Length: 90
Image (cartoon, rainbow, N blue to C red; front, side, top):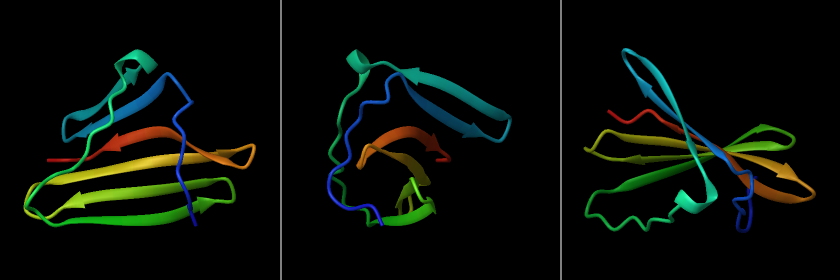
């Protein structure tokens, strides 16, 4: 299970936007990265999944909004690092 705080050092970071018409892949460079804090009245759900011995995912969903984002992490040198963001929001 993912524990602790992950670092974000796998820049450029791949951001996959999933649409019915097809996927769009964008790249986020270190200078363009921004942290956001979710402040909403909607209930959000996070799910954590082990996807391999050195891979895991955290899924963020917000009820009644269509938000569904998966954050993929890789473990490198005993540290979890954000590797890919996959946005399937509608």
